[in-house]
Amino acid sequence: MNEKDKVYSKELVGKTVVSKSGKKFGEVGDMIFEVGSGELIHIVLKAPTSYIDKLELEKTKDNEILIPFSAVIASGDYIVVAEEDII
Image (cartoon, rainbow, N blue to C red; front, side, top):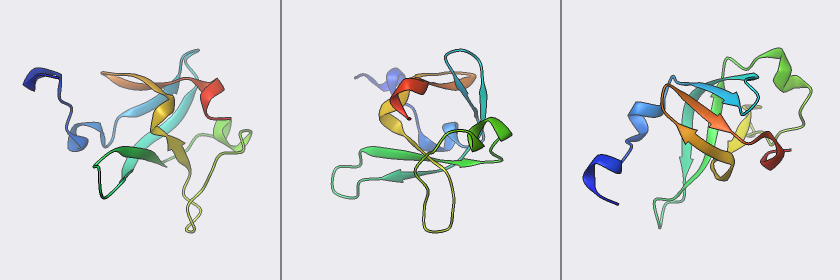
């Protein structure tokens, strides 16, 4: 990975999270990292849409919705997730 391929976490916060089919999930509120490796584990969703209520997603102890980072398939203007990888 060269320098131009790096994405900094502060660039992701506030971006809209959508599914491949265009369903809006909410926005990136925060991220959860593995301390030892620095690997990104989860995106914490803020301003979740009503569509998210239909999905039984993992939540934090504070009832914040988590999206596994492994489900992210693209990031640009939006964070695109593979819905089949999170349910």
